[in-house]
Length: 238
Image 1 (cartoon, rainbow, N blue to C red):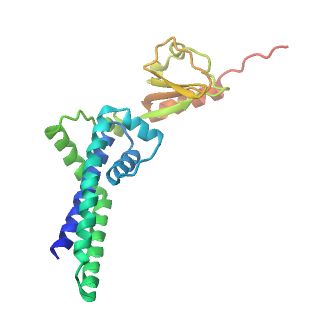
Image 2 (cartoon, rainbow, N blue to C red; image 1 turned 135 degrees about the vertical axis):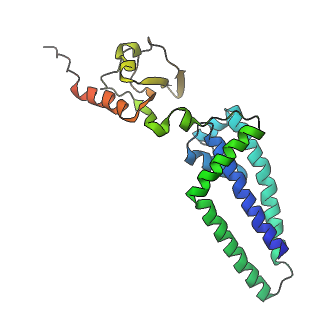
């Protein structure tokens, strides 16, 4: 039974390690879904060639977190497999059935605990404070930093061919009067995408540009959608 309890402890510690990595990645600016997926992928040793993976590899802090997860994941999976074998080796049929029941029950309890939202929020607070106190990782709670809980949002607007703000300079849009800030522009050049960070006022918006905007949730829609509807039509040539 010692091996069985050891296996459950290893599974529990593995879930905690993934959760710590997930929250740490989330605090670097990733969404909770992407952070969780990448943390699980790194811990299990499964690699995925995705845009999110490239964004993690190119970011020094995220790369350090992933490296630690890979290290602990390799040790955790190997130990789990060895302990699982020891749990059932040399046992009679009745003992195997009993241990299998205990194992399934324990895994179910751990799974329910891992799915608890209240436990997740508690772990998030504890893990965040622990990372700030005991590590040199410069992590930030971007959700609080950008005021995302107070109605602000970071949204993406695509400049279409018929958009009223196409071929206009940023400073001519007077976005500051609407409380909107363009943080970055993703612009396509043939098969590559160029990032224009903190674009200056003389930057001209082109069709196909992806604007990363920071503002109140309703401000972006009100400006870019309503103005598109009420923008006066240009006189047609005779």
